[in-house]
Image (tube, rainbow, N blue to C red; front, side):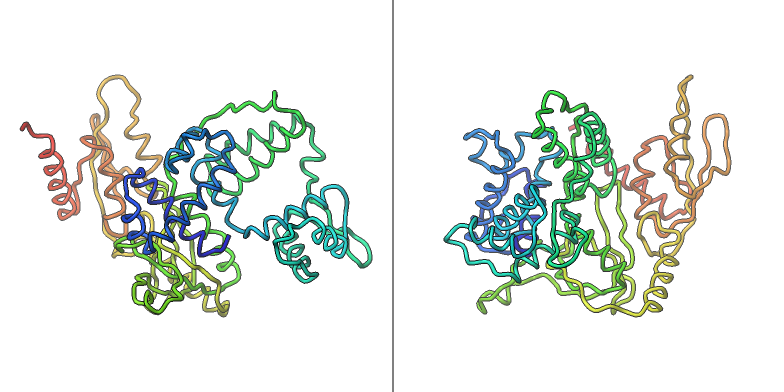
Length: 436
């Protein structure tokens, strides 16, 4: 599937999660910045992918996409996240061709010309003919991603499936590995590659008649859908950072009325595009565990800039930069976020808060949480019923939700402006619960 189409479907799935399927076709199309006709084609494509992944979906469940995606809510390997990655990287013709190649190399090591002959015989007659250049390009791609390996020896080179891991382990060892990958993929970041490995192990075990041994010992209820959807760009950006390369993309800010724009070829629609093209040097990727968001910190014409990865579309690598420039801007970035709770680059401010200890013989879970989550802040005073916590942090915007989450157990003392902000917010919250 083309990268542009993948961007479109990522934004569609994000909206589906946020709105619970409440938008009409017209509302979805307007928000995505596409026509209703294009929206309908995207829906059909998504349904095809879902039906291929969820073979057990009933006819009734297949009628509505939202229901189809929701029926296996507790199956963490196949929610409305992972099936998109399976269908992302190849078009239909590529999918058939690569399937034939992998099937052939699974049985024995073959040369490029032998694989070409097999493809010419096995491909559908309505698909275009395959040439040697295409086969060699496919082999290079499969070798780069670690699916196949080249056998040692003289030319012509022979290629085989790289499945030593599953071939050398017993079923019991594979089940232990499967359980480990299951836990790590659901609890660590990034997750997509772990999910794909987990599914590959599961399919291999089922093929080897180990179905009775494959028991799901853990069930995960996933909340941060954007986290995995944004991993579509994560490895592209990490590759650009390692290669000291700039990236080009079309960006939609969180305040934008649309979240996607197609690559318009019709001049009548050229002015409707609302995304803004950017070219920048990525320096650091940051994950916000509180909201499940990825951020790219980069250097561009305006200096250090922060981008939410959910707004990035049509990303491509550009030219490389000098190592000295990259190091200089990286140091500049690290200095600007030295006191950031997350990525804030506002001037540093000293925050002082009083935390009240729980009454009774219970353990002091308030203090335990402050020590665990309080980053470089310190407890400077402690009494029988409360303690004082201090931290120097860039601005108060990012630390505010954490302090507010303690409710009545936390009182902001300084700075005075921040204290007044919190008082005003708590008064507003109180007004929501006043008697009517």
